[in-house]
Image 1 (cartoon, rainbow, N blue to C red):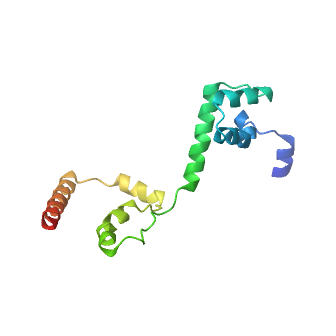
Image 2: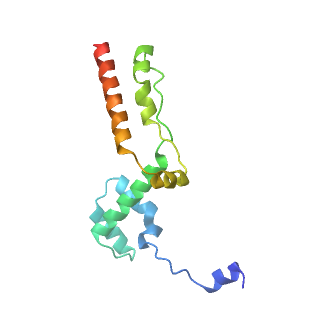
Image 3: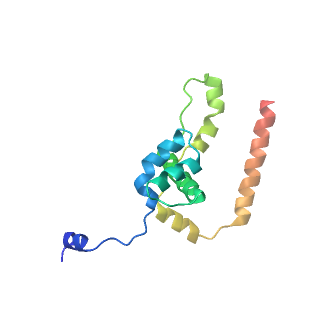
Length: 138
């Protein structure tokens, strides 16, 4: 039996939200300012029984999914800033840039032993350097 025959003969048993079929109209009503209880009433009139709390969770989950898709891959660069301010914020920009990483890199990091004393020394040195830089600016 090939995969197509199997799919014709067998219905999937994976749990899927009853609201998935109504996702677009639900989000449209929500974006137009309809209250969740009003959206729920519309769903009930279409044969979908759900609590207002369940609907609220569904809407929040869908909004988060959309927000994740719209996140930029890197922070925008402020080209319009004067050069002095642009130089000042260069370090801050580098900290805000999002980068993709390989999950295997994370596994390697998790397996390494951490030398807390060395990290503490690095942190203290960086803090001293930051304070010197702040004092020299003033």
